[in-house]
Image (cartoon, rainbow, N blue to C red; front, side, top):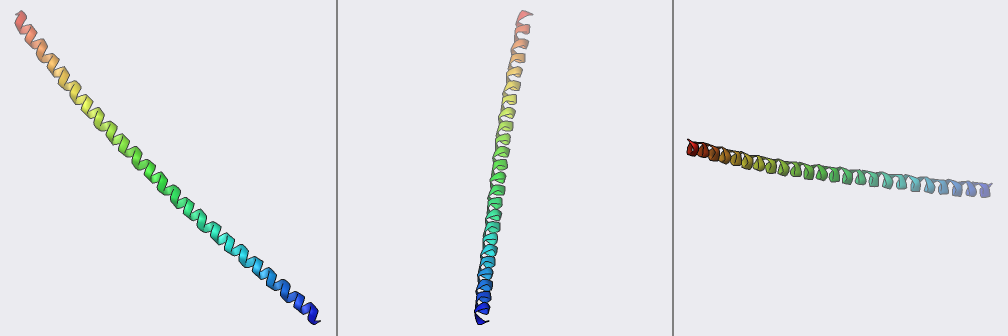
Length: 88
């Protein structure tokens, strides 16, 4: 009977060790998943910040181009008016 008891105790200890090891592995995997998700969110935020900065730069360039085109149109208007005066 004591042999059976020893075998049962050894089996229970082995099962407990296996259960603890599995729980620890699950916990590590969960922590790693959380870490990867955090990194992904950070990368996504960086991507969107970069895109926003690019959009602002493009808008600034477009505004500058529009200002130059307006100045050029004004110059052409002035030249046209000057030519009309010369003709009259």
